Length: 512
Image 1 (cartoon, rainbow, N blue to C red):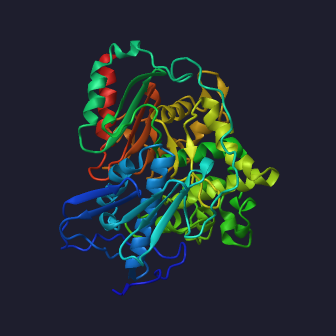
Image 2: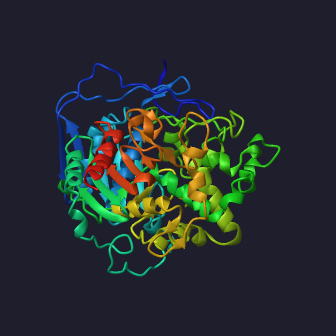
Image 3: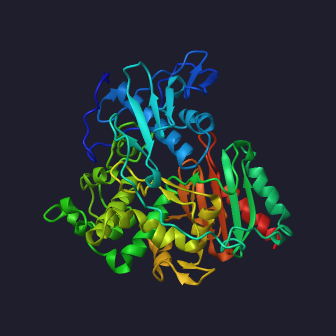
């Protein structure tokens, strides 16, 4: 296998499937030491014994150390920037607890322990350099309302002023979900539930927050206080953002629009291009037929190229070629969701402005249910990364789950936020085939067992959920009138969702 020192492996979007490989064996790990210079803002991490300097991966028949390093630097910079400026956590805390542990979970991120991180507070940016002084680096910068994005080595000192998050009134002094006050009385009768929730933080799977809603009331919540987290801490949902993108499509395009050709908003797909056959519904169901590789272990997979190597992610995804007839073949694709965001942008901007687009999630969804902490991040081109980058407090994730439980109607106000029957139609129960996937919404999925029906795991048949990387889930159980939110950072031990959800359901069942 040739090992390329410079340049990317030859691969065009959507034409080569990356093969996951394990890091090269035989290289020892060691104790990691983190040093931080508070004056300069530089953190260096190293191991005192030999480290895994670089892993070799296959993609299109070749491998490149520089590609590994560039992906590594990009992910580290993005996670660090967002952790500081979107989640509002201390820089050194984010580096130690979020960034450096990533190399336990993603094989090609093997040199973070040797990386140099520079936090430029005045520019609200984080840059990461790996390997030699001439090796690739990643820069992520905060752009106010649009969150953090990966940028090139040259980027504007100042961005044009943005007003993407409309002003809003404070939440009323009322119990959740109308307000943010938690009633004290539900604590009585939920003692077993409290024990089950607290026990979950002791299983080594990186739980950071758990919230349980029963009969419309917040009856249990717990946070990893050792990390300084509490009810006001915005946490990343990763792919749970896909479900929210599906909601936004429902609000803007609706039932009739899902039958339209996506080429109505994507010019390069116009007939006679075969991709003109792709309907919006096909994109919602991950049945577009587009070639795509979602493997995070291969640095040149489509998902890694998109998230870690492209300034305009949705445009990159639209370059994918058609491999299967649309509507016939299911394949999970973050690119598909970002194409949906591009469709939303083009549709809204066709009669409005960029500001209309960037305010859309807040005016149409988040602020209407009081989810004021929610922050969608955009790529460098200004399109929301609807596949992956949504931060919200656990209580606001619970609000989004409650909206789903009540089929798009917001209980405190009685307002129908999503079109009538949109949520019900989007559920996986209406989709045929082995994959329990609806319109950007999972049937019950477990990190250990994969996609299976809820009843096969001893869970209610009607359970469905949002699901995100590294142990994020919002599980909705209509038959039990429950919503179970779990957010974490399980880069090591897998999150056994079925056992956790079963324990919560059993605890509530024993006491109610």
